[in-house]
Amino acid sequence: MLTVDGLETFYGASQALFSVTLEVREGEVVTLLGRNGMGKTTTVHSITGIVPARSGRIEFEGQQIEKARSFRIGQAGIALVPEGRQVFPNLTVRENLVATAANRHGRADPWTVTRILDMFPPLADRFDAMGSLLSGGEQQMLAIGRALMTNPKLLILDEATEGLAPLVRQEIWRCLERLKVDGQSILVIDKNIADLARVADRHYIIEKGTIVWAGTTRELQSDPELLAERIGV
Ligand code: ATP
Image 1 (tube, rainbow, N blue to C red):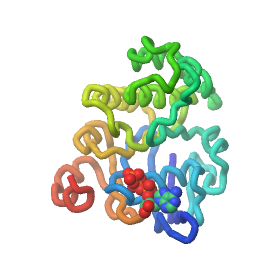
Image 2: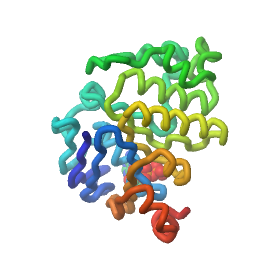
Image 3: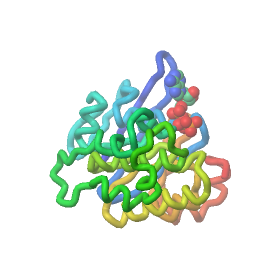
């Protein structure tokens, strides 16, 4: 579904990504792991066109997208749940959800506001509240709901549960497990390896802008030294 090959991204003269190569297949949940500042956000920002790639190839469902504008990449079927949520602060929960609603690829059972509220019941109680008044957990649920309302083929989450209370984190992981059962393809960044291992099929570790390891959940779990050395857990 998504193939990233030899991706190089710069901020001005400073190179952040060095030949990043990774793949997400249809129906897979894949993680991008690494310490702070290693290039995880830059990688997903390059995939989504927020920080353009200097060179390399990004192919999504057979289309070259490395030169495409962000909104085109969104229309092609990639949705990002950004780090820090970035819900629309002066729109209500309902408005945040309907603002992005689209079913461009004619999904038979498209996401609706009702289905999002069923996935995240706390949002129902806050339906008419402004985005800015929500708790961090509610904002993250809304950010995921907003992304799902675009009926994405690939959902990308940057720091899925960072800064959230343990109970809310569990709610987010439950949501990702449900999405996986439904066949949703997901690329997720998070630091919580134990929870990621429950839901993910494969993992990539990025260090100083380069993918230094790729493998399955079983391979990752069987190598505690790798986790300690590369991710610091
Ligand atoms: P974190 O989890 O802390 O967000 P990360 O793995 O997502 O870390 P990136 O944010 O992708 O890492 O950063 C990769 C490198 O690019 C770092 O050296 C960072 O300082 C640099 N960088 C990130 N954003 C910018 C920017 N807007 N301008 C210049 N350099 C940047």
